[in-house]
Length: 472
Image (cartoon, rainbow, N blue to C red; front, side, top):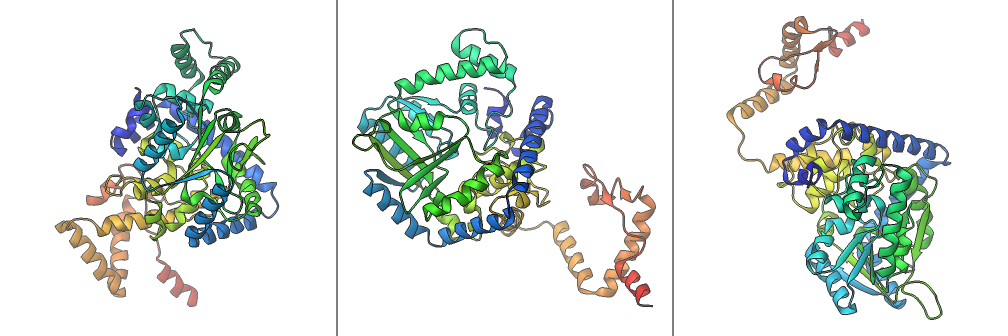
């Protein structure tokens, strides 16, 4: 198992250090995020009133979350009416148990999976393999990282950290034949291997980008045909979905389809948009004999009742990752959890625990690029600050120096005359040390800041002094 797979077992700072010292990873991240960002800008520019559409999508999400219980019950009724089966999973353990029971009851032995971050979240693959099931990821990127024993590095491009040389090596080890590092040959090999898996599978497992409460329709959006083969070839189809993915009506779906592909890859529409409404009906040639929808909570209800409810509006497009200057340098594995980037810095502490992921709320420059990129305008910086506030509240007793520092700050900020005096003192002490308007090294405790960045020198005149001059 290589370093990318081991990151989750290391602390965040160590994982960051490994990522920054990995030139191929740095090149791959720059290439991917630059390409996706450029496509995102072009696609939004070609969409009339895109900002108004994003506002509309956000309103739909806000309304749905405010009435989530009603729409989930409606979804259950709609799926059941069509001959499907609905299962409720409170925890990840419940989800694993439900899927294994479905496989056992249906006598399934071979499983194919389309790309699903929710199945990654509940660690479904190891549980199925431990139960003796043969499990194959059929998204080509997911197939590669399955062979490598890794987790996805990006919501859209899970194998971004791999080169064609490393993919050729993995496929060569898997097949026993020497594979050239030619992309066309590698793709052809992957297609041949996965077609055989589809033909022999008796269970298909997918996620769900959206689920329509009104019709009981499960929506899958992808750029490979594997999702359709996964959900139509095997005799049993299981869709595992977070409860926040439900939308009220079929008429709401085009709003999100117009935004999802543009935000994720810069496409007007993904290559495949699959709508699944129940199992195969009498007289139909394709589709599963059984359809099961597993609705996963796994902490979402707790988040719904918290100040971080807005995070449940996420449609998993990956746009915030592409825009984030932190993700663009360290990649997904450094975050340690299933979800990475700015949204992962919120979801992982909320779904797992803040105490187990103390660095993630700070893995952001708070520049706001993620908010600008988000197709449903989730205020990620605001929630990251909120998580930092929770950490501060839960901290142990402050040290003497920390208490002294906060006490002095409070005393200065409460007294305008003392504040002006402090500014003059800072100007006298620090401006002589500045070069080109920046301080390369601060004295005392401030040196920790300038170890990795410069500090702006105090202005030659304060705003108050300039205001007095302007009035004169």
